[in-house]
Image 1 (spheres, protein in one colour):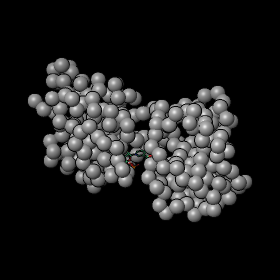
Image 2 (cartoon, rainbow, N blue to C red; image 1 turned 90 degrees about the vertical axis):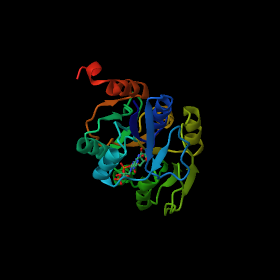
Image 3 (cartoon, rainbow, N blue to C red; image 1 turned 45 degrees about the vertical axis):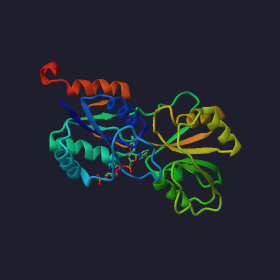
Image 4 (cartoon, rainbow, N blue to C red; image 1 turned 120 degrees about the vertical axis):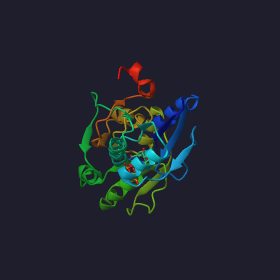
Length: 255
Ligand code: NAP
């Protein structure tokens, strides 16, 4: 019997999970991407691209494609699709599992200011000119145009279009993972004194946080958005075990 699984992706873990599940003859995997990135990385399973049209649209899609299991492996800050996924699972009756990457926790030496959004981050930078490293997506960067007194180094996967309307902005196009030593070199070379970032969790982008600690640089971190409470695992390995359990015949699950 073939089990059909839809993975909501856009993260490294979603790709890793898809690769692990793709080798199994009993599974038929589809990976869903929002279609935001201009040059998306190659995926190990068939991909569908674009929104579903809200929770109802996703629920309809799950029914049409006879999906047996929905896996939300989206980014921790992709709160809308996670909410839609939980609601679509409820409407359709399709079981859902989520991969919830744990947030970074502060350790001794960290100098973090927590904010809820880009406007609060701008306020937290203060009035005096600073040299700021923005490790953010396109949507969040725009708010920093209201603080043109700072010099910005902006790193993103896709170009910031239109460019930030400030006199001093440099752009780095790059996709992680980023090694701590390279991050430290970048922060020193650019004389950065504040970093603005999401609390993405995981190792791939933690290097800048560790380097900031060593260098005594302030970090302005976006708080995590609230995500729906669905059965979840913190790692790909743990989620794989949950998938096995979920797809086991009901009597083996003790249902
Ligand atoms: P979002 O605000 O939670 O979702 C906005 C809308 O985009 C959703 O309502 C849905 O449209 C569509 N969508 C999002 N993810 C989708 C997916 N995997 N497949 C199909 N449709 C999807 O999402 P976002 O923050 O813009 O993130 C978009 C994508 O980028 C996600 O796949 C996420 O994993 C990835 N990503 C996000 C971040 C981040 O910081 N937010 C960072 C790295 C990667 P409909 O309502 O029409 O279905």
